[in-house]
Image 1 (cartoon, rainbow, N blue to C red):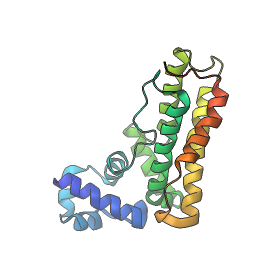
Image 2: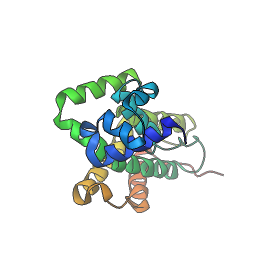
Image 3: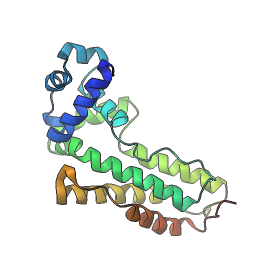
Image 4: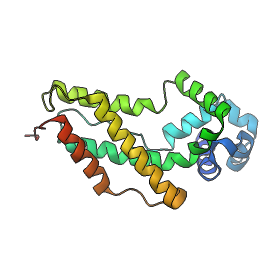
Length: 197
């Protein structure tokens, strides 16, 4: 394992236990067995490190994007819901403390914009998938796609928050049944889905 990966592993572990706000680059470098200068050879700043932890040490918020026209729309939405539930449950301990630190939150928000990342991108990804399914005629032409994408993403975030609130960072993962139920409910709003041949 290379230096970069060791630093990312240490950062993910420390950020999960201490949160992003309280995790310092000096502490992360020391935990990885390197100097802070070595950390900055691989990451331009703390925001770059946070972004890389989110991208490479957390599940993708919508998972491997399903191929439009494969499986059923409901099954594909359930897979995306499972990914989102997992991502939010694992990332809440990292990012939650920033909400109470307006300056820190502003710096993080600006960095995410510079890197083309941030919470709205999950909704965009789901909307793009649904748009492709609509082009294939597998969902109703008048379905409110951005709203449905926001409902799926928002429900996953809220469920992860409730689990974290109840049990902390060691909460058990959300059930597959929850992901299936969310997908089933939202699929009804999309109109009839055609099963694959």
